[in-house]
Amino acid sequence: MSVEKITSKILEDAKAQADAITLDANLRAEGIVNEAKENAESLIESYKTRGEEEKLKLIDRKKSVAEIDGRKITLGVKQEIIDKAFKLAAEKISSMENDKYIEFLVEKIQASGVRTGEIVMNPNQREKIGTKLVDKLNQTFATDAGNKGFTLSEETVDAVGGFMVKDGQIYMNGTLENLIEEEYGNIVSSVVEKLF
Image (cartoon, rainbow, N blue to C red; front, side, top):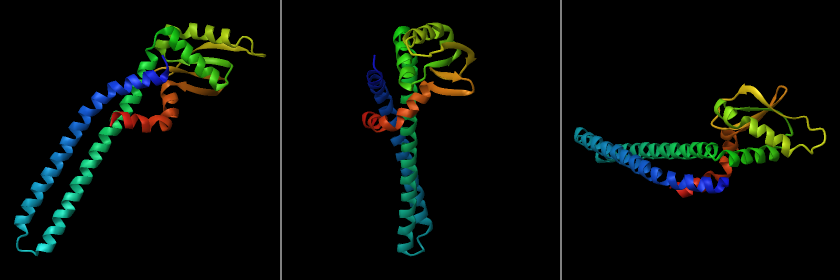
């Protein structure tokens, strides 16, 4: 299953959740605006002795602040939804069927140009597919001249999935979080379009 299909499915799932959260945020924002209007009305009563012009300026300022606060809440909730969609994408990818997931990781390593090093994974995936991944990498790159091969590191990484390739003191970060972060700028606008 391609990353695009996975992302599309995730976006569909996230859309329903996004709509509910957006509705909640809009209701909260509307509550803030209504509360500000109530506060403004009470201020009107207390400032009756002042000039009409000053009163209207104060009301406008209070409404503007309330509207800005409402927009900030809505934007914050939308950002949470987007972040959750990307996190869900990483979780979906890491829970793919083992052989497909191994192929996905091999493709990412192949695209990186790295041909040797220690494969560092999270503890669960290290135990579950680590040896198979290393075997597949060594089989895939066996014909490369001077290839020293890949080994499975005893070291682990705190990540949802993916890998790091360690070569001496140098690490190549292929964790799912990093891969998604690299693609974030390229796909965030389409994610926003589909969610909202």
